[in-house]
Image 1 (tube, rainbow, N blue to C red):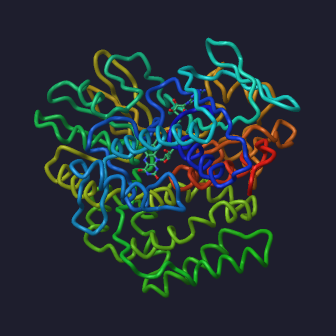
Image 2 (tube, rainbow, N blue to C red):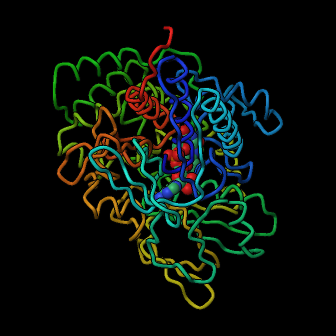
Length: 495
Ligand SMILES: Cc1cc2nc3c(=O)[nH]c(=O)nc-3n(C[C@H](O)[C@H](O)[C@H](O)COP(=O)(O)OP(=O)(O)OC[C@H]3O[C@@H](n4cnc5c(N)ncnc54)[C@H](O)[C@@H]3O)c2cc1C
């Protein structure tokens, strides 16, 4: 396993589950390469401030989506003091508590594998290259000797964010926003801060800075100005069954579909719920300002709840829908709607929306769309916005988020060496190309490499929305099943 974060943990758990149910299978020896911190939390759930919350309720977070309540039960035993209760029925825990859960689950899976006769070794080095041969794979860590293994699971997460305005090295520029607690410490008293981006990462930074009482003022500056939607309490209602049935039927009848077909089905479902697609998307398509969006969604959650319910219901279908879209629709979606979809698919907890609104109302937070450029000048930064407006800031925090643009991978890093050597090829929509059924990496000629798999964000080009625990865990389960099916078996075992 290359990478020891949430995807790797989900894979190990799924592998142990598979093996323990097969008395004839020989348990494998697993090597995990993870250079950064303990195994389990990875990048997404590392230790940080309690104000950085999970964006899904605790009952929707688990390493195993065959057991959705796993984290909730763990939290009940280990973390009630840190859990936060929202005004609604949903409970949003700090991300670091999910990280502690992952570390605990990882340690348990290691012990379980040991009890089954296998082992787990953790190597604290990044891997620079992987060379598959017909039978095995050579894994090249940064410092130690290469290792020969039977299967490689790439659990690398996404790629580091770009330095869009080339500000690295300028005093006061924070390229890496996490841990946000640390970034907040780097901001001087009363500082004027520009946070680049307006997604969940930018919100984490704004909320942490919003805890300060020394006059720090924050601007979320981005091109589109689109804030994530506010998560609605979806309650116990039905799960858009008719929509799911319509989608199932359409995919059974047709090989390709258009964006218009899909919009038609969504509109049908939304009209059954008393709204329309246009109405539900209005705050996003009309580019409503940040504070107005928050006020609208908190005040009148009806249309948001309807569309969020559809989006949740279609979760198991995204990969197939994405691959069935005709090329023109795929491009149009990427260009015009993927940002809106992300806002709706990964909404912020309502408790965060209320805090942001309070900060905006007190004048300590503002939202600015149309950013065009940011320049470092003597001891400060100057940002240029559409319409020729300029603003001065003391600190710039890059919260544009991690990405899957493979061309941005730094020379000598694993993704770059894999594509350069032809053992992988970039997917046109981001990440690396994989076989959609097995998640095996496709080489430069499009041929699957049977022992090289991806779990997580790097397969987003093929599967579309993989940046969530649910997707990572579902993929991990499928890949674990495949790997377990190839493990050697023991003779003479009573079945
Ligand atoms: C800040 C943030 C918050 C998120 N919040 C949520 C949420 O609330 N709910 C949700 O469902 N999803 C959330 N996500 C989506 C998240 O991507 C998935 O849930 C999942 O955690 C991804 O885990 P991962 O192991 O694939 O990636 P990561 O967590 O990024 O872990 C990848 C690991 O691989 C290691 N690595 C990378 N390259 C190498 C190499 N060459 N050699 C060895 N090791 C390497 C890294 O050190 C890292 O530890 C969030 C994502 C981010 C970035």
